[in-house]
Length: 315
Figure 1 (cartoon, rainbow, N blue to C red):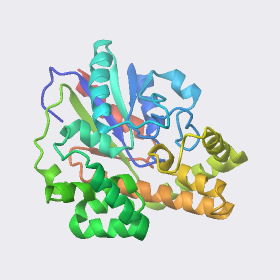
Figure 2: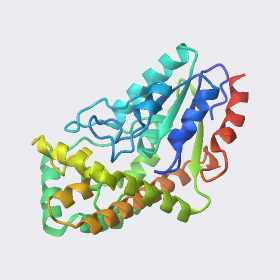
Figure 3: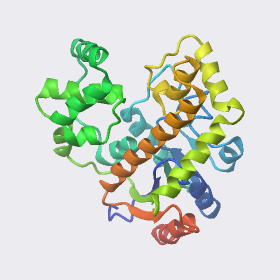
């Protein structure tokens, strides 16, 4: 954390999916007047509540929340937009005498906020079209393997089906002649206008986190809640599986089921596997963040452990 006590304090609560970030943030907010800034690329979408494990109406009513339900699933929300919104919100919340809590698992957002925006080459529509044509012929897992040969660092944090990010990484290599990881490594670190204390809720036993993930996905499937939600989104007629919103974990598997490509058992299995893979990637990101304070998300009271370290910083 920056050694600048005159600056306002903000607290980041990071962690993999199902690590209890929301519950911990709400508990901290009961002890310290706070407002929550969501750091989650799925919670920004309106009408996507079940599959994103969006906080309930009761939870949202307990503490002011920001950057939830702000865009339509047809639209996109960039790291740059997140960073600009968060810098503004932290200033506004601090001015109200409250503690900004940055809560979520989209590590790219946290990195973009802490390190600043990159100076990567812009999009090239012709090149992007060629990459999409290649992917249509050989599949995105093969494109991911191609990326692993040219930029293993970036490939390691991307899922083999993450078409958007794999395509962008390959595009950057073709345009710049350098891997994206190398370009990002040379980026000058930004200086934030606030002190950021980062906590990471990480499991001492990965198997327990996996069990939590399975239980939560089963709850999403209960009474066809997730399927009904995705069916309603499909019926709009303007959404498709290629959109960032519909590629969110759970949604793409439900879409496949409703298309008849997989059965109910495969829906559950692939949904849980995809969520575990997401958690693994999130933990990989976290291990590359040396300034974080690790809190066992399976401990008796993670919120109290964080509070004990937050309170002295407010004095």
